[in-house]
Image (tube, rainbow, N blue to C red):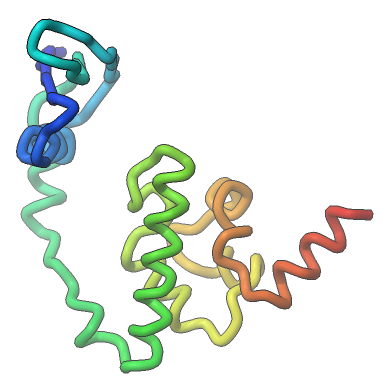
Length: 154
């Protein structure tokens, strides 16, 4: 196990955050401790990251980036983009990374559905009961959302 410290000033332009995010994606993170520190030069976030070095290189090398604008037809891509916006809001609200909510592949599968229901969600590779319990309510079709809340009201 190794330790790396990051200091990100409150007024950071995004460069320090980007550096930390690249590091986090390329290593297996075991634990992150964070603290807001006020000093003579202003406030900053300090992160202590405990990690295992380079645990994911093989997975990243074989992965190719998919351009969903080319893969999906125009209407489906529009729905995909809308779902991506919802995912971004949910991730911010829940305090998690967007891919924790749903990956792009899972969002593309949702976008291909005629109607997003709990049953349909569970049929998508990578979406299990835990993700459905935690995030489905944000993505359900209006009719499914209404039915789900009626059952919850009873």
